[in-house]
Length: 218
Image (cartoon, rainbow, N blue to C red; front, side, top):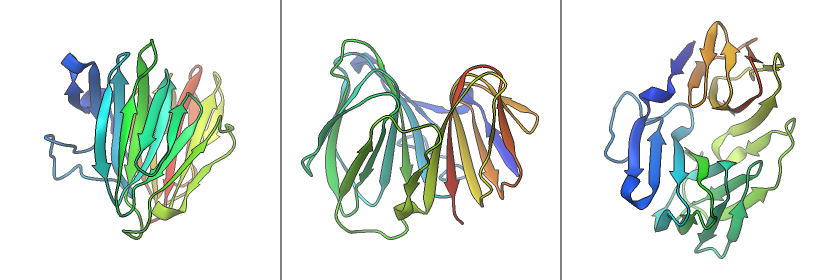
């Protein structure tokens, strides 16, 4: 089963006066929809746009796997576990908040920053926070997140190129750039597909495209 969610259906948040624009694919903050709380392990998929100098001051997280993908610009990350990193397009950043951690996220550059941050529920709560960044992950290299029973596939496609959708109980496909076709549906930037019991599906790029695919166990 495929449920397509369009970019225009996302909840708007953030603080435009502070240079922050947020688009939420799932219930988040003051936007609550009991029918849209999660899909598989995914609890949130937030697109954040930060103007130069804007950011999120130190704030807490716990019992959440947080994966960040930068679309354009550079994201400065600092956390109370001692990590200080600049995340760039093509990098995958993971913060396992476990029993609790605080972090800061800012655009310290001189151009706008756009990134997507995905929150996943861990299989087991608690533990010690951990952090990882993979620089310039290759297109054919999946990123495993065993703490949530999930795997991320970042695909950068050329016009006409096809890629298989993982056969899995749950697959979440989020289009970052360009347009792709999925089982008769055209998906553009910000569109997503929530796929249950995926089997034998393909994505076809209509031009240059970038898609994030989450493969998740039941």
